[in-house]
Image 1 (cartoon, helix red, strand yellow):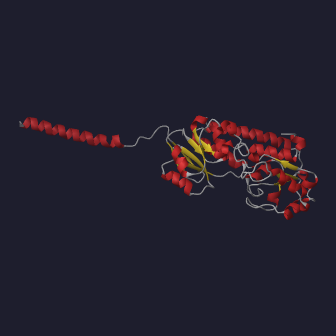
Image 2: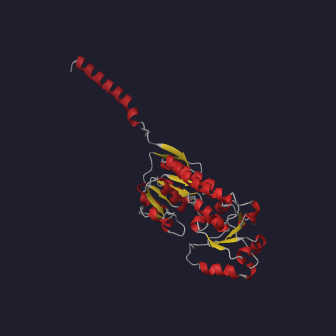
Image 3: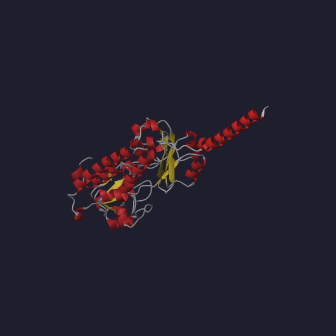
Length: 320
């Protein structure tokens, strides 16, 4: 081979090498999708979403209800098993459009391969950890203890789902309903405020700092559990009930264990000798307000406010 051809070959190899070195970093660099975005969950964890999630999974009735208000059923991979339970769910009809149901069990959730999982912060830490370890995208949300918390969760879920406008519209509808109730309650003078006591098969009397206590505040009533200084787990004793003397007993409508005879419970309260001096018993004001409303921490919490207000002030709300 002549020196001329040898030189040309060596030059060719040199330029190919330079060309390869110049292109390699460019071809290997990660390309950030224009549809990607990040949100921060209720525990301060930054959650990255490559695009609007199309297979969202919820393991809690509150997130079930909010999610159904934000996205089309086709974008929901699964709802919690309580979505079909009319005693605690407001979305039984709509939920029929989503086939899968789950409990908070890692294996079942992983098997569905969702692209976003909504988990309440009261779940054991091992559950979201197992899902993250499997590569799933997890959003842990703060359990709502007030109407304001519900608004915040709606906004956060909407941001995670890429549906901020729908989230704001949902809040507007909720606030409009709340404003209508508040307007009616302006006619109730402070000395005329009714005291209510909640009886529950799920434990607790809904004391200070609970969503029920905030429902009572918006409904213009005094909450016996809060007056007794209880927290979310404490239950009113007979002595406390006699001392507080509530005007209305709110009786349960749903028993998650299916073991409680609710009519028998009503009769026991009505005939209990130690409760006969209480105004609620003397006046026969033992009222049932739907548990799905009283325990609600979604946009339907307004129905809990209306239910309590109607039980306390039937002359203003009729049979609402």
